[in-house]
Length: 374
Image (cartoon, rainbow, N blue to C red; front, side, top):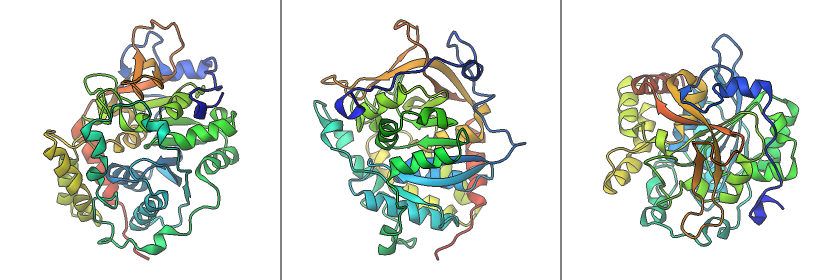
């Protein structure tokens, strides 16, 4: 049975000695995320793919990765999520790459999944229905035209569909690619469905998804948006047997504030600082209209984890996703006490240890970016 049928045939594999070294304390206690999972500044740049549904916080993540010499962006795969038009989301990605001076970076479009997979049986909150308002009509804070997006950005995508692009990139460079997923997980789940050997080819998977504590959900009262929009896909990914899988859920993304981030960017006076300011304006205003005290930079967190794992505290735990609940569909459930008796399958980021340093690293990365509109 495949993930599309509401389950998965991809069972978790036994942990290796290397995995045990990575996850650290086997009792699941909170620990600093350092060691194998993090990048060493003494080595070569870490090669990454980003699977994204380019909205406002996705844009921040892509720019952060693009401006960090510690990372080498090998390509973007586009997931359905923040918008319903996959080519429009792809065109946002191409605009961002052009602004960053990385226009030659490949962009592969994903398949548009059946909407009922993410909607059936769920009680969608009012905030969830307003999701499009957060990112604007262009899913880029309503500023994409101002910064040079045009019809040509809807063409010239990679010849492979996103799932095959992910697999072929990893197959050509086994154990060298880290996949960062900051949208719904349909592309990765589809790649796993066709290529069960993918977990052995990837170095690491880092995901923005789920909610585990006080912040239970933003799409429904119980579900985070990326997992709600594809709970079967999320469950398939979490149980696929990746040796290194990290989750950045709402609990930690809400420890960041886009308002602070864009203010510090603007004060730096760098080439893209005004773009970051304009990009975030609508997102921040909508969050404040909802009565929120901050506007989280969700998708920047997984990229920052790769750059500075020392900034994070984490816990190793078993996580699974509810796929059939009438009011809990898409809910991420962490077995903190080991009551299921199942092997821990991921590391959940719990706390940012130094938020000021988080912002400083982001601002420095943006300051490195050249602007190119050609």
